[in-house]
Image (cartoon, rainbow, N blue to C red):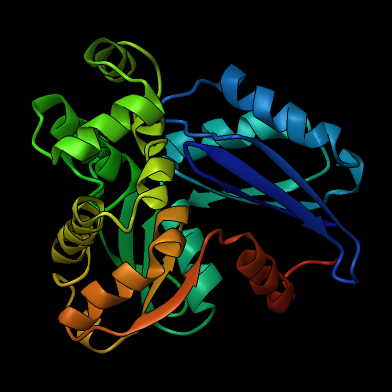
Length: 284
């Protein structure tokens, strides 16, 4: 059996398969070694193991946010190893997972638009270019955290239509104190800000909200796509809940830049399963 794990800051999808239709799926909390220590990561791995037969897993392919350096990859690998002792573990970044899940063995540009954002140019085997996301404070344009930050900033400054201010107060019941506490003092502020994407989706027909998303995607395109000369040659693929939830707006933004929208998947887990089954680099 092989086990694929796709992890962001919000959740982790774990899916095992033997290639003959026998599968098991588990969802746990997000794993990001930039913000979590080995004990925190091990807690999520333990939860995943409790829903499977760990001794049957021979290979684990983990793709996650914050897994760019060898140090962070080793941290995640060590935390998982305790609960899947028989498995050979490979840890890679979430962008590499997005590329494999959408491009497979063909060249393309792979993007993430979920809680955070990012992009890379993939040559069919490896990432040859990427642009750093810089996190939700300095970057992550177009992401759920970015859109949420724009929304609450405009709300606090009253730089939005009066009816939208009233709607946020009535539906969300948030105050300046609650927002600043969650952003400045509590852990995982990006996850908190991305949580406003549900409200944004529910009110997408309001002109202010539609413009907020459109301009957020324009910012994404300007910083994460058009700097690549390959953007005029390759399809632009996306994974992530924000890309999937606002696909029509995303397509409109790309069309404005004469760019080709490729695959749009909410999560890369099924594409990664298909990719690794097609590799035939292991014995099931």
